[in-house]
Length: 324
Image (cartoon, rainbow, N blue to C red; front, top):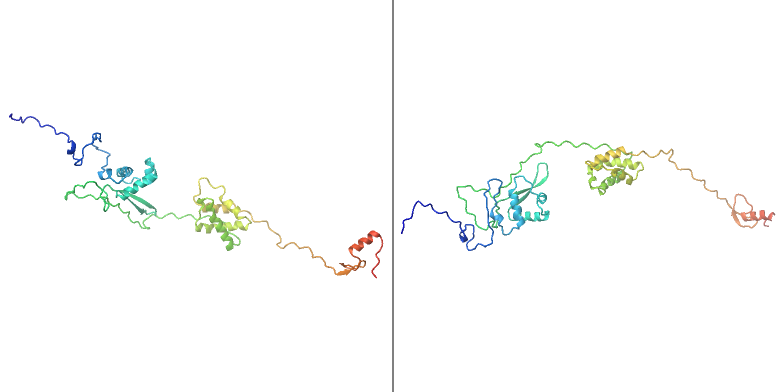
């Protein structure tokens, strides 16, 4: 046998094929028309996505794609349903269902928090390594991390918002007082209740005309002043809600207070006397007398002939002989 030449460089290793590929499961043969990869190493703008999400057996394709998109977003990006529906062609119903899938499998967590201003917001947390109890998140076990290397938290809790006391916040500017309204001469309780009912019913014509209890109590005396001037409730309502600004009302109560004062109608005309006009005098009731001609009864001031006998006497031109 010839001696092997040690100066010959070793041959390059061939690419593993068949069952020898490290990412191929044992016992499976490659499909002749299967997927091929042409990979280029990323140096910028890339996100590491685990195969437990990309190849999840229970998640839908929309949920897997949406979970991948959420993990690629920067911190603080908008991840609510309306924002995602505006970004992708899928509607709000399908996106909401995909978010619920990710939340059920531990890839998403949504918590409600109250801001220092009192507003309630939803905080969304995307987890790249979910740890749902009793659920396997990977098809294959992950190799254990060496003891020397610190284990990264699977899904860190969002930092809690610092508690801000009311004294540390900037005080809100005081709300401007409503303009004065006309005062009635006799604020009867029944009239005030009618005014409150009229003001409370304005929201039926326009939901933006909703008034608070304090605003209604402030405006009610002005409405009573209109009602005292013989203005019907329908006319008062028409004067308040007609020709409203096209841009809307920021403070409906201030607008109504200005209208009640500026458009106050004049008082009714003055009456010289409140006594009613004298009635006609009652007719005089004469006593009953007997007619001298026919002896029938009739009423008259003095005795004599009745109306028929006088008419006959005038027609005949002769006097009626008295009854013996």
